[in-house]
Figure 1: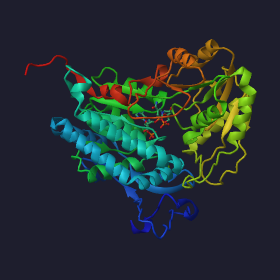
Figure 2: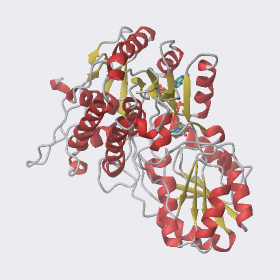
Figure 3: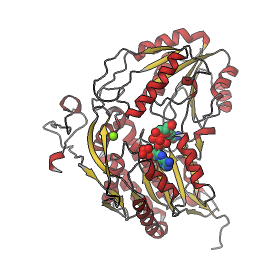
Figure 4: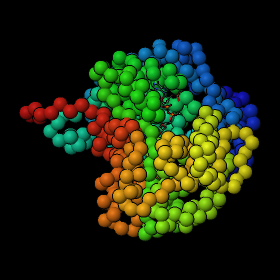
Length: 503
Ligand code: NAP
Ligand code: MG
């Protein structure tokens, strides 16, 4: 461990960071915010970090430099089985605990997470490539909010489902993607525990470090062994988990393609399923909107988290009368986006998460050019090492173009136009996805008219990419089913027996 110990502090991180074989950091003299990334992480099963029975490990890297950060255990079938069994063993006692006691654990987890916020923000930024500004201000506080919010429901399930006798389901298998690793873990684990379930979580292969660090928080909080188990690994680990007969429910966030595979894997079994999948959100800007604010919303909609956002506003629909003006404003604003070292607190856009993701973005951008759309890229110098892509926008896009239909999952905006609200709705809904949408207009009545017609699980009005644990999130059509967050999210983690027993 000593060889590989690193120390870091968020605020003055940028200038001192040297990305070498192992990244090295000299903290400011007054700093007390030190943390380490271990050279190796094991699986978290039954409340302990345990070596994988598979004997295998894989590296996780910093996508901004391509340097390895640590190596992580690869869970094989036997490890998956051990984790599910640990969840089964812990279930009866966790279920029997009063809601008030379960809430205490969740509150404790939330508080410890906030106490260790800087460390979590740094590790997330290093492992994922997203800017420290976002991990510090969005990912970590929002992850803590999910534990706080769901702690509030743990002792109020009877109020949430009056007269319906809510019961936990059992062991829940949860599989999450790489774009919000800590937040997705919190988003999945918190409601499951609040309702009295136990969990086996499989983080994404390329961003496992914060979910593993969260296990340290569980230990610190004294969470009973086996209530949460975290098994790192690849797609095969995820597939083994969802196949396991000991699960009562599967909750998945990821691509539509894998979501369909999981649907097939659980078909015919007595397993509940929720799927949060891809998106191709329409972001509508009307001529009467506050255009400068709309520009900010559109930039947030597509360049936040490098565009690695399932609900990203990737299809901009601008009313024809203001198209030229709006595109001009956007182009100017895009040239001021600071792309670079994710650990620099002034950075707006960090690294693309992985090489395959960069290849996918490049492929779709090349297709956009080939199909005749006009590419605008912000002038910026990209680092030599690591995975990078400049903020990009296509104009002259037709609905038939791949860049208007397929999820790019990167910092690439496709701009289309419309004339009337009816045409806007028709174009917005002309997609196989239905996760989110955004509307910018000054007219309240128009917002209501549009929101009713938009086939999307989340519709933002005069804002975009705002998240809250109290607000249900989820898709229509190929964006999945089931909701996460809010009262609706709790529904996905209970079985309702109906009828009140006397006394
Ligand atoms: P992905 O390839 O579907 O992977 C998601 C997770 O599933 C990862 O942990 C992955 O492991 C695992 N996995 C892969 N194959 C599996 C299988 N056959 N059975 C079970 N698990 C399997 O998606 P991704 O590339 O990580 O994430 C990008 C996609 O997720 C985008 O399409 C995006 O829209 C969607 N997304 C949706 C939401 C939402 O809330 N709707 C949120 C975020 C992302 P590995 O990492 O080892 O491959
Ligand atoms: Mg990584």
